[in-house]
Length: 409
Image (cartoon, rainbow, N blue to C red):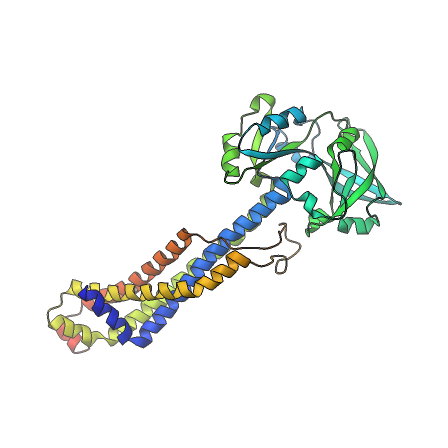
């Protein structure tokens, strides 16, 4: 206890050096804590947005579909969709499930033709799995008896609006080119060019008539209940339906470009945090070293009156830990309002991100903080303070008493 009090008094006696070290550690802790919360929130926000916008929590497909996904195979389907969906919903971990048929087609109207990606969905159940219904900006959502949803950008190019009739042409499962006329039910906007300018949505019944399918879908998109890890669920149930030629896939399988972009950003940010902390540690090491040399006669006097080398070493290290303790308190005070704002209020990502990125963004971004991030920030600061004080303390402790009293360095 006496050593701790001596160390604490020494911190305030050497105000200039202590202030520099406290400022460096405080800033490092704040950036570390806020940075970890930012990255965690970034993951949560983007990944949940991707699941809500398109992929769901997991998907079940024909085992051979993914290998040929680029050609939108119509011969590798999930058969008996209605009964299979009911079977899935008997799983207490599944909240909702909806079938889709994906294919490419051409929209024609008034002499204009545009190639599009077509997503045939089960309208009432798709609304339970993704946010499609909420993205309809004008007109109505899809009904079971036909219709088409077109992106606002694409609709402007074609010059169509809700109530107009368009023709959708596609090659069916037998290689025959067919077409169907569909009434524009509504216009959607995701704020995501790849969706708004190149994708359309129709009901499953219309796709079955157009493509020659019978109660078949390309995939069943699953939404899991809160608290269920989608990756773990997909892994557990991967081969549950192998007897029917089906396989479960985690959602990341269908969002690899976006996930790679997010992980690349996160990796760069973690590297930046490590470099920042290394700089803070080096700076503290240099500052503590200079402080120790300025006080070399003081340490010589302590040695002369009976203090052992290990006691001197402990005293100096405890000084560093006292600086870390003060820095922790200051960092907590400064971080509190920033934490409240980032996690409680947040801000719009759409205002600062490039609209061309392959990631759909929701309305507001919020950071995601937890106790482990605070603990890591504190432990890192303690490690920096210990290293920053131990290295110069070890050099000082090796000095002889006479050298120290003479001020020799």
